[in-house]
Image (cartoon, rainbow, N blue to C red; front, top):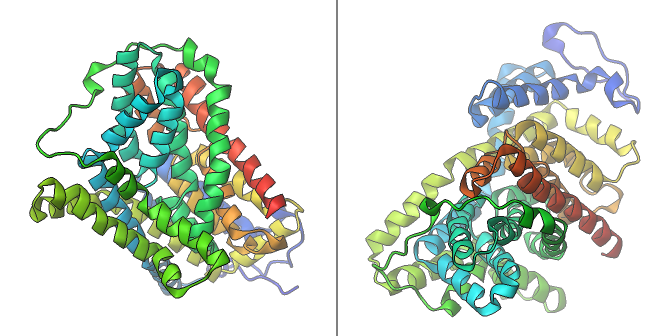
Length: 457
């Protein structure tokens, strides 16, 4: 095997050829130190995540043998390659989610489902609600929109708040970690070269058991912890514009799933250029946004100026997410340019571990360290990139394994942890016993589902 020349600018000698032991080779020092640096900058220094990514990319590039100019060039290409295919999908996704929220469609879906399922099946109603509303929305938006409704339902039914809310949040977590068009799954699918339609279908198949597992495993916790309700978080209904019918609300909210997932299914049996075009994620999201503009905006009496203002605010809300994804893309490009990516692929491949389990472990470790599910998923994907296609593993399942790892063991360095604590009015200990356990359950059961699916497809 050829020798690897690393750390040239620092005057290090040529490294010996790689063997199968990961930690005995200096070839991995830049990436290991880079990840440690990223964790420290984000969690200890509290530096902006995008800036942290840029500093880490330069560090890994220069210590990996690149000149400053080469490192900057790799960073620019990485950002361009990553965002080039994602900006359309994520931008349209933010617009759709904003229109679904502000039009009252999310509230209507929730209220009608709860009324239809009844008190006895209230958890199931909210699981379905979280799944439907969570698909077009970013996690924080879905949380802030739905949790006040959960609080109102708990107040009206006298049921324990966590009993009502935790299953719905498990559903939101699955859409956030497993399903396109959410940012992390979409970006990972692009990096792995996975089909978005198949990723969506497999994600639904593995996500449903994960949600139900959290529901059943936490049933005692949900009834034991009964915090007092905070009335200030109950949503006030805006009656300035009429809310469309439930049918319209559901069709608009689920249109991306119908187009992307449906096209993948139909194309399997009867491929056709028109079906393929409708299932293209960019086209599907565009059509969904146009439908939302008309049915949830113009048709409800909102002028086009009002709708345009809503769309503009939606775009501004995802700027930070886009920058984080861009940083992860730059990190991936640096790894490729320094050839560290190739060497990691060789060593990881020699460990004999399933790439699916490995992706979950790497994402989980970064998640515990950094807190952000998006950052941990994208960083893990950069590390796992050389393993795509190894041993015949489906790239779609690799997306799901990475996403599952990225939502495990949420604790005090995760914004979602504190959102839950404040809205549900629980202590840190109670948050760990409920929220953290729920996220970890969804993560582990999701991985098990992926491994089972891997034996079937």
